[in-house]
Length: 75
Image (tube, rainbow, N blue to C red; front, side):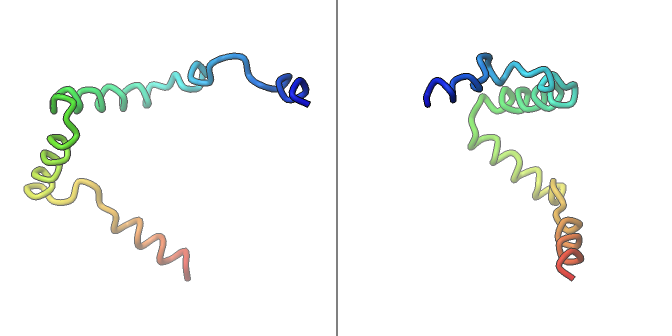
């Protein structure tokens, strides 16, 4: 039984899939890496900075539209 299952196991690293090479993902990773570097790779410092920005500029992410859509879908 084990031999039967092993015939269908992929023999290559799943992270090397071609679809992972996407310009949008690469740009997001660059932004993520830059944010992490700016904060010295300290998650607490990153969160503190985002919360301070949120206080001065308002919500960074606006979830009101999402709530409206969810309400309409329930109806």
